[in-house]
Length: 138
Image 1 (cartoon, rainbow, N blue to C red):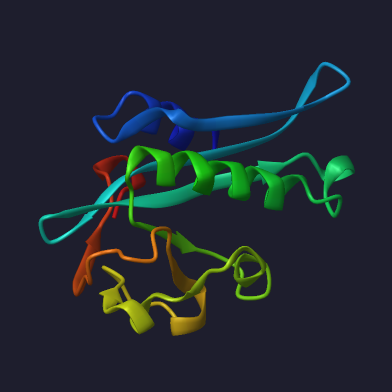
Image 2 (cartoon, rainbow, N blue to C red; image 1 turned 180 degrees about the horizontal axis):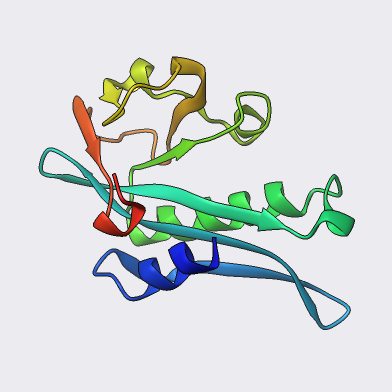
């Protein structure tokens, strides 16, 4: 994961304001990164990775990082965020199957694992295949 984060930080998709850390007792215990992705000509966000140290998991840190990231993304004008992840975890933050928004994965994946959230209620509708930054190797 370290290599992915470094590659994304060096990419044109990197958004410094959307690389967030959680700190507990002066120690970094969590990190989230949102980078630019596209659906056709529309720029959206890809949430990846999200990590929390094992000793600090199940304490709401990941959900807090997601919520803060969503708030900043809204302020920056991003309308959608996409995530490939656990179908019981990300819906807690409002993610739903991306297909409900007309968003398709660039590879075969169960619908329940490829999710999206509309960050701005009046977001322009999208329809198409998500294109990740090349750093993801997709």
